Length: 87
Picture 1 (cartoon, rainbow, N blue to C red):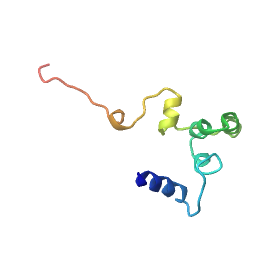
Picture 2: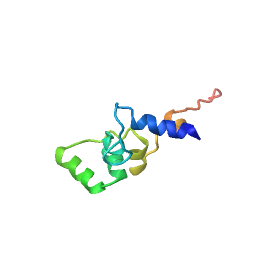
Picture 3: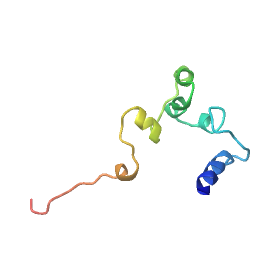
Picture 4: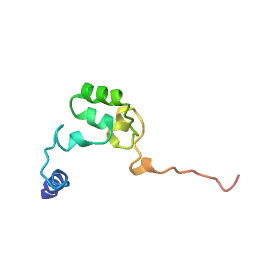
């Protein structure tokens, strides 16, 4: 499907230059420590983040899966409460 290729090319060129999909390009420029470390060179990313005191806000899918939290997407993005009327 051509739409998949178009999506990848949009991500690779979103900053005005062609960037690789790898640790030196798109995947290495993520704001989340855990998302960066999930791709490649895990120890390097975690040590560097620890040395400079970087914090991860756990807002993405990858980092929430790593720490075992439910991901706030789809049905996990809302809270539903049932209040019976006959109480």
